[in-house]
Image: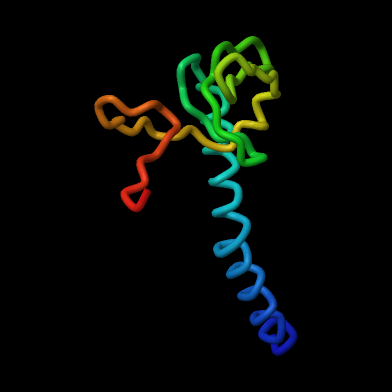
Length: 103
């Protein structure tokens, strides 16, 4: 019986590790896989490399992303890190540019 009690802290640490690390990571991985499987042309995305672009086409496991006007790169679905929410542009502004009030 005392041998069983001596393993209790080890079991508690393993359970805590699973709850704090493994479970949330698994949840994030499933959410990312769901996001990558629901990609559609026209969505603004951020690649895992940090580049932003707009999806132009999706074919099987490949996605074509326009990263600049006329510049299209082909990447695999797992390279898509996130979908960027569409922000409302100011009237008369060019997409991708920001006005600097100090300039």
